[in-house]
Amino acid sequence: MNRAYNFNAGPSALPLAVLEKAQSELLNFNGTGMSVMELSHRSQAYDEVHNKAKQLLKEILRVPDSYDILFLQGGASLQFAMIPMNFLPQEKKAYFVLTGSWSEKALKEASKIGKTDVIASSKEANYTHIPYDFQTENLHDAAYLHITSNNTIFGTQWKKFPKTNIPLIADMSSDILSREINVEQFDLIYAGAQKNLGPSGVTVVIIRKDLLEKTNNYVPTILNYQTHANKNSLYNTPPTFAIYMLSLVLEWVQTEGGLLKIEQRNKEKAEIVYRAIDESEGFYKPHAHQDSRSNMNVTFTLPSKELTQQFLEKAKEQNLIGLNGHRSVGGCRASIYNAVPLEACEKLAQFMADFRKKY
Image (cartoon, rainbow, N blue to C red; front, top):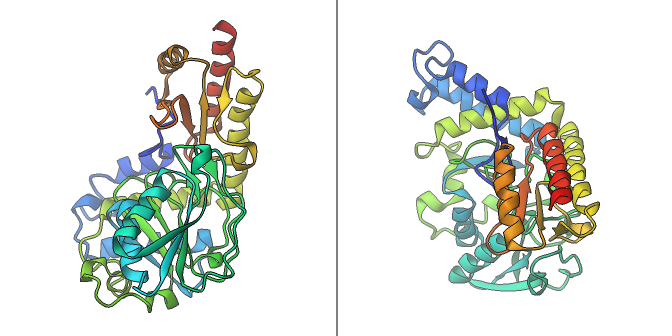
């Protein structure tokens, strides 16, 4: 079997061991004579899957008992609306740090629901860096501060998170589970699964229980976080297969040595690709400033559109897939999430060196 070197930005690579285990259990899960996709979400067999995924996530991320873990649908995009619907009262204001397209979309949705403001932004610099220089001490009207921890399109990532006296909410869709974090620094973390957690279809929400108590009571039942917390994310039919795959990915993280080992490997992978850029004498130009470079999404441009197209075509011939940059940045992007092996980054770096010598 000729597996591709998968650099897609999302849905993205899954660990081969996870895919193989899912394949072996696909027709008969745990002796039920049914696929996980066929199990009732009210059955004991599925209940064990559901609670195992929740427990593993709690253990790996060291989520305190003062937080709840929810499995929702609708991706991060639904969270852009759910968060202000639940936690932005009329007399308060939601503050945003703009670091890319996804934080812009989160701001746009919140602005439809209540008052918002931008406290910091790197938009004028085409989102080449994380704007760390801002203060929150005097934001007495703040409902919360929203950040996006990693920016897939622009290839930037928060290296240190803001310390603030107001509720901190983070979209961690593209770098959750890639490094160790202090969950207690945040009041709410949300993440679409399709980068590091599993396949698309499930969204993980980690929310402080005392924040749950502050949900606006006029929110529709299905969009109220309390609804899902009270029913263990089983108020309606959850994305059962996606949650099963999430549990397998979490098992894989444990067998790989946990988050510390995963983080070390991700740094090593990123260094390999960034070295190929930095040693290219300007042939490959990085988009992100060095102090804001993402370990998940490496973005760079070539001297011309014609060379970029040739690069992508030749890369595909070498089984290097998904290196197209986003249209708003152009150039190329290598998404090197947890499941992308070190070998893939080495292969890409060698290809980049060979292509530069030739062209």
